Length: 255
Image (cartoon, rainbow, N blue to C red; front, side, top):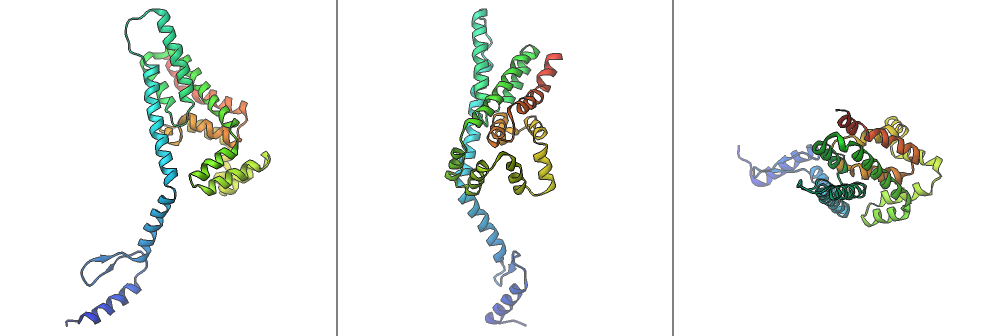
């Protein structure tokens, strides 16, 4: 039996009504048409990306800037191997050491990877220098974050159109120190979240030794977040950094 076009269209609409949103319906023309549910999900995702376009672009610029500074740091800390006198070598080493501390303290600069490259190139003889430089860089980033007012961070988040994060930073800064743990527990209400906050020192040590943590800001970025959060006192933070940075330089030193 051959149906006329109006009858076929009515049957098609009736079939599509019975299909759940998000699934494609067969069109009389033979093509599949996406349901309204799937279209609304895609539209919501694209709208979310567009609303956060500044934050996404800013994150990309931070990654590119960190990688560029990482290459610059590599050139400074791994000079050309050519004959030179001892005073010149000493001057180059000290300049590279200061540059290593300053640049590795900047978020998204892969300072740990540069330090590891130095250990591979020069061996255990530079392990104490690399260790001291990395600890100093993390402490510097932590201290700078403690000095930056929360209003500046909230203003940056507002400019990036991350209004919820900006509001939380403002409320978090206004809360008493004893109430800040409860504020974070409200964001992560699960028992796992409370355990992570309670074991934040162990979590920081693991994050500092996680490969690829440069996507989260690297060692400098993690130290900056720790300082800005006001959850870490200076001496416990220093103890965590001393222990977390030690394994790799110690291995090269004793090997």
